[in-house]
Image (cartoon, rainbow, N blue to C red; front, side, top):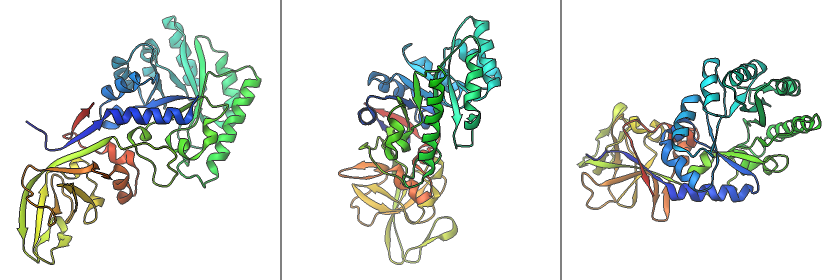
Length: 373
């Protein structure tokens, strides 16, 4: 039986986006971020397509994601945990050859001990907190911690990285100061004989807004949301990437409703004239934000149709007065491309006052994930 709601993933568009990003930052390498099961879309097809396109560096948030990714990738792929590692997770991750973050000296000591026990060298990257305030070694303590960690046995300290909280805003001076601070730490570490193979601070926002984040001494960038063709709404759009996702559902019922009819919970919409209204088989349980109520649009029969009435958990009502012959079972595009036009997760994000990641990660569990090759 066909699912009522599905999100179709265009892997060819995904690969084109990856190649555009790689060309934009060349000669730097691109680490593709596929955390949270590729933002809830299904990591296996993403990883395979990107690996075949040339990606060799992959980032995740935690150990279970790393192990799932390892199942589908070639042994030549580098899988890196970008956030933190807990004491009881370390040994299994070292055994699996996952690249681990050093967020403080105690975590480094535990990783070294586990590697020694297993008779291995653990690959690690120093994670610096240069202004994110979330995880990592504080910038003021970075050089001292790096020196101490380098004395530990069984560690290969191959990389160093940080993260920017304001890179979506090219006018905010904080990011430029953060990049300069990070670069000074790397330069001083180099002067002390610590040469890193991988140096990265730029994620998708910085790639679009701060060219200095992908020039020397940096030799790698990270990208996640730009792979989907989405951007933060406040910054520049230096990359010419394209949408990769189409969220579809179907019409459940079509009725001609009289003037004065109110629609949905809270009776937030009242028809001022007889109106042809379609009820579509998707609601907030499927990922349609409540913020689209009375102002968002969907596409039926190639035409934009206004959402009227509050979005409910399973259904949404729309004005289909301009759509001829609409009937139950007809396809509805909630977001995606249609002809030369499109509705994107970015559009929804602006209504909700958020960003595209929030929209994509909010797609419900009953939404079928389908790959279009």
